Length: 101
Image (cartoon, rainbow, N blue to C red; front, side):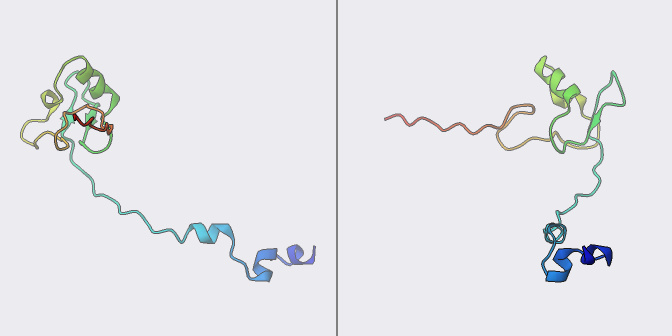
């Protein structure tokens, strides 16, 4: 094809945008700054968590065994990370409340 031999694409010649250009037009996500570590495993010091995102597996396993996540807080850094009305490690699934009538 003559167009390809000259180094152009059919989309460039016809004036259409390629899908790559349209995908890059998406708004950029806001980046969060670095956060200090708030939780650390005393048995393995490499296990740590900032309190952001999902609870890591090592901490979730210990919470499941009955140990409080607050026991792993690094002293003097911060208060425990909790959502309103939820305990740490509790799943946040919306369940409709049955109306009594």
